[in-house]
Length: 196
Image (cartoon, rainbow, N blue to C red):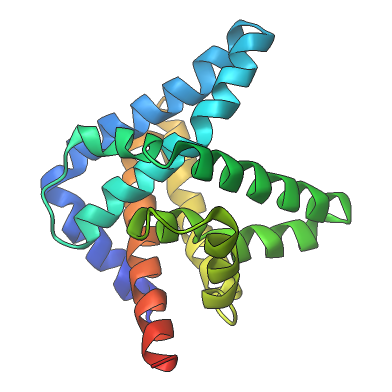
């Protein structure tokens, strides 16, 4: 897979809906960050909202990656398998934290290996959270370094976004997220072809 080509194609694919996608990313960031600044209850609320909204982001960008017209309402679709996504969110974060506790590298490896869980649930809402985690680990086998490189590509863009009064970050976020959705689409297709 050519990462440069995937990133370039994602940018072109995003152009018609870049503004709406930026608004979605601003909404996501505000809902996740503002309550946690209020009090302890706000922190708990942020934790409870983070998983479903992350799933909603994945649903939104997967729709774009498949050529569907984007809708703001897609971000709320992450609340439909609520218990499942909360368990997935808590499990992923707990596993990653344990990995980070045993030096940083295991945490990064675990995070990369579990990173496709939300996309898997987005495509298969009926799947159990532990099956989605297992499937993510399986399809990321041999792809973790490549995904890490994809993330690294966006770091200079995020730095540039911060220099533009932080507003630029919300221009980069949709591009990054759509690139991840397209990356998932490619590796899940390849994995399906290998197992059939």
